[in-house]
Length: 181
Image 1: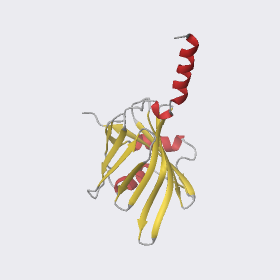
Image 2: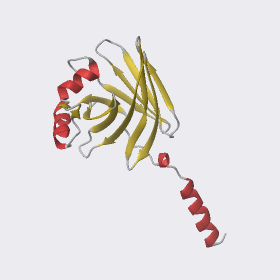
Image 3: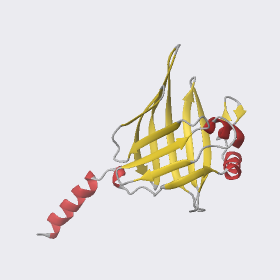
Image 4: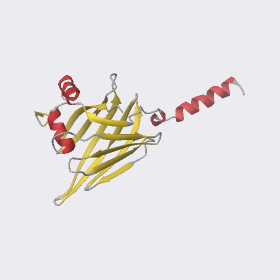
């Protein structure tokens, strides 16, 4: 085989490689909200804590995560094909989200909420974009979201979520600590 043919084949192979061909960081484990680091991240990221003119707090995030009190742990399993997050809310209800890592559409239904998304690896981070629709007695409420998840240098998992709510974009940043066995 000539060097020129090898170079052409290598170029075609690289050109056909998708961003999802990158290997995803390993998020497997049980994660709990790190309220102190979350509060520090909110202060350090201009605009990150702002939502409709107010400021989100680690306590507010905790309440949103689990209905008040201690936020639920996230149990994450991961294969080369999918990332699965299971969390148990304070009501005892379990929510499961499965994100396909090949860039194809993932559909997750939890109660009245349907989430459609696509996930890809970009620069060592897992990026999920999609829509979430909640069915209510007054009709469906839809929002768009983008979630970027990465492992920080201290081993914590950071999740930055950008979401529309009534036409306003809201950004929240949360940090999680992995439970040691």
